[in-house]
Image (cartoon, rainbow, N blue to C red; front, side, top):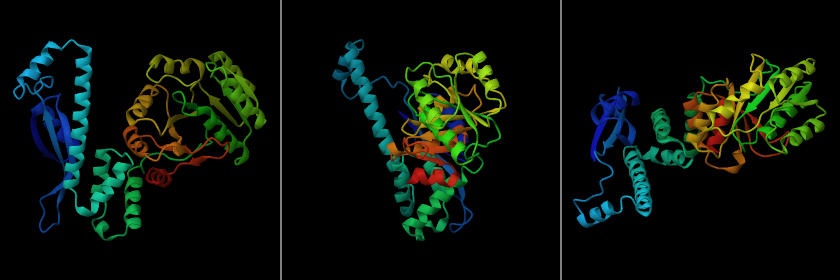
Length: 364
């Protein structure tokens, strides 16, 4: 494998150099923030150091070391057991590279930042985000006590989300719509939002459901409507939706429950537009489970992008202690958070999100 170190002003410039010299098949083995130049430690410039590598033929197994094993591998190339063995070997190699990357990154950190890096890593905050956070901490953080430098980390993370919109329902639009994949708790979350609007803000509410796929879905939302003494309509088509809008003309807030969809099937997501009139009157929240993988969250967001998403609602905070994927998602998708839920109780177990509260929940 050909391995080379690159130093650039930012990650974008580093990636350009890597692609030009090593090609598109290159992989990043490690990245960290470094400081160069300056006089007596002053006026130093922050740069990104990236170690990248490229294997000219990653399928060749160290035949120059053990020819007999290479020959055996050649003979078993079409054997499924051999393929499985090769996959396992690649996964083990990835684990090794990840371990080496973490060790290399920590070697490049001052001693007082190693512990902070470990805390962020334990929260499953990504490598690039960790480097970005640590590089923006004040220089005197090493002189502070653990509670103080924990507070500094929270401030830095909060600052990086300041440009995004946080907070609950705006009450500027009549229709509140929740979308998302199956099993994230959309219906329960919708009931919490409706209860909050009625009990705390004294709004006259109603429910519409388009979830005609699950047997118990209609009964579930119907039960919530009965408890809150709110009218309720089932919509099977866009015509049904228009009739429900006319029926609820005198209602302050209408809460729309949608069916959970397989987010990898774009057609199913696009079918929502055939059931719901997404006009300027609708405020839409994407519901995501904190227990999901970051890549899955980003794919869900991408596949729902044909519908305008105002903010995100994170659910199931009570089911995990590693919530770093929330932070990476917020910055990657450039979406603020409306609410966070931490249980099944209605109307309780829901928090109106702010930048500070979101970071505190991630770092809790």
